[in-house]
Image (cartoon, rainbow, N blue to C red):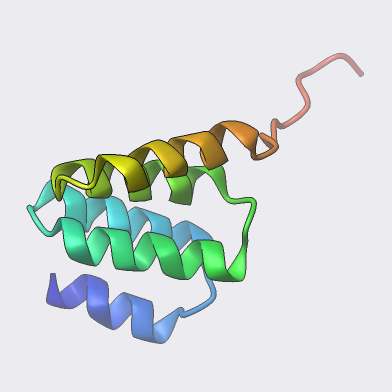
Length: 88
């Protein structure tokens, strides 16, 4: 928990690290912290589907089903970035 908070302070605009930190917070039983980090990511990057998925899971864990449903709706609406596959 403390390590995630330190990471977030050291990399406050790194969406990848923040989302992973939010997932870790969720996994260790801190859904409010997970949701807070997820919300920080979408404030910076409003189309980050992974952050919305974290927000949905944390909201569900907190019993906030309306927020969970809204986050899932936003995750589904966000464009997915897919790396191109082979075929030179």
